[in-house]
Image 1 (cartoon, rainbow, N blue to C red):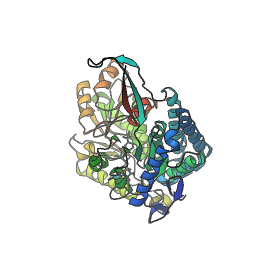
Image 2 (image 1 turned 60 degrees about the horizontal axis):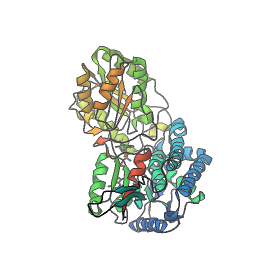
Image 3 (image 1 turned 135 degrees about the vertical axis):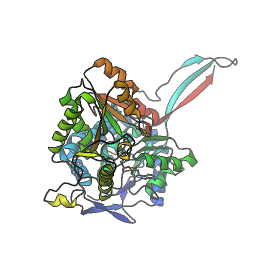
Image 4 (image 1 turned 120 degrees about the vertical axis):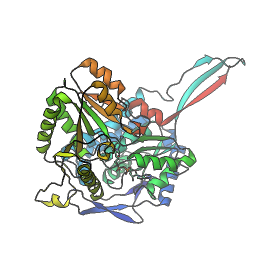
Length: 478
Ligand code: NAD
C-alpha cells in the first residue's frame, strides 16, 4: 500500500521518498514520503487551527462519538489493517489478528468509555476555601487539553502503540501530529483514512512520515508549536528527544527500552514457567519491549528448567523476521558478542535456513544462552531479539538483587506457587509492571510504564488522560 502524509484533512505525498523493505524477503515493497520541515510546520499549524475551530469546540460526547466511529472504521477494514501490519513487519498473521489490530480498536473504545467516567472539565471541585485572610473563595479545577501534541512511535507494534497514545490524546481534546516509525508507515496511513471517513475535523489528526534524527522526528520534537511529546522507542532516542525538547521545556511522556527479568522459584509450576518464558522471550521474535531477556532460576530446578526451555525453543516454527537488515545485524552482533563473552549457546545462536524466499529475509534463530557473568554486555544491554540468558540464583534476596541490577526497569515476571513470596517479592522489583505467573496480561486501565532508563510517566486509563490534559485552578472571591 502507498504511504501518504495526512495534513489539515488532506492526503499528500509530495517531495522525496525512501524505499520500504519487506523483512520476510528482503525485497523492496513500496516507497515512503519523507516529510520536510515545511510539511511538519504545516501539520503544526493545522493542529492549532483545529483547536481554535471545530475540534477545540467539540464536547465530550462528540469526542467520544468520534473515537467510537474510528474504532468502528478500523473494525470495518480489519483485514486490510492486518494485511498492512503483516506486510510491514513480517509478523505472524495470527499475532496481528489477535493482538495488534484488536488492541488498536480496543484503545479507541476504552477511551471513549473512559470519557464518561470522567465528566467534561473533570476533577471539578467546588469548595469554599481558605483565602489567606482576604475572605472566602470558591476554588475549582478544570482540565484542559495540552494543545498540539506530537506522538512518535516505533515499528514493533505499529498501530497498537500509535493508537495507545492517539486515542487518549484525542479523548482529552488535543490535536495530534503522529509520526510512525519509518519502517512501518502503512497502518498509520490506513488510520488516517479511517479518521477522514469518520469525519474527524480537519487538523485534529495529522500524520507525517519520515525518519527521526535530522528529519521529521527531530523537526517535531524541537518545534515551538508542539505543546507536548509522547514517545515510545529506544532509551537513547528518548535522551536525544529530551535534549531537543529542552529549549521549549516541552512536557514529555516516555515509554523506552527494557532488559526485563523473569524470576523462576523452585516452588513454581515449572511447566507453566517454561511455557510462559517461551512466550515472554520469543513472542514477535523478542521484538516487544516487555519481552524477557534475563531469566533467573532457583538452583534446585535450574538444569531441569534450562533443558525444558531449550527443548521447547527448538520446536518453535512460524516465527517472523527481525524488522530490518540493520536490526538483524545488531541482534547477530550480540550473538557473536555472547560467544566472545564466554556464553554457552544452549540452542540457536545463528540464522535459520528455510530453503525458500525467507532465506533472503531478516531472520535469526530463537536463542537460549547460559554461563555469562552479570557484568557481560549481553546481560546488561537491550538486544530486542529472540534471545534470553538464563542464570541460577540461591535465595529470594539474591533473586531480587539480580532483577534490580539493571539500568532498565520496564517489566518483570515472577513464577512461584507461594502466595506470600509473590506479594513479598513483587513490590521490591524495580520495574513499572510485575507479572506473577503470567506475562503481558493487560487491563487498559492499569498504569503502564517504566522506571529508571525505561521511561518517564505512566500510560493507561486515567494516567494517559492526566498526561494529555492540564489541571487549571480557578479561584473566585466570594
Ligand atoms: P527508535 O527509538 O529507534 O525509534 C522510535 C521512533 O523514534 C521512530 O518513529 C523514529 O523515527 C523516531 N526517532 C528516532 N530518532 C529520533 C530523534 N532523534 N528525534 C525524534 N524522533 C526520533 O526505536 P525503535 O527501534 O523503533 O523501537 C524499538 C525500541 O522501542 C526498543 O528499545 C523497545 O524497547 C522500545 N519500545 C518500548 C516500549 C514501551 O512501551 N516501553 C514499547 C515498544 C518499544
